[in-house]
Image (cartoon, rainbow, N blue to C red):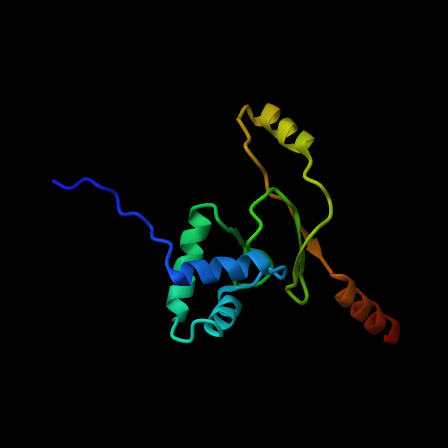
Length: 140
């Protein structure tokens, strides 16, 4: 009986997807990744992009972000860092705030668990939407 586990091969598609994710700073959704990869691999399907993004996220090679929009976004940065989500335009940005080790230590003590890492997301208006909101409020 063959008991070997199915190995995930590093296909050309996976390499191109990973390269796109490593250079992306905008936390793209699968459709955006598809358009970027399709310019390099014209025969790639959207289903292949979805399947590979989910697989890479499941293996910890990407972060899978859910937030204010219905579309799942992905992040090529897998180190612990914080995100800001704009509730109006849907923009997702990395913050410059360094991860707070003390937060993990506090939560670990409070819930009596071992914390390896944490994720923290902030929600509100980005600077562009905030300016638009203020100008509209000023007209009323």
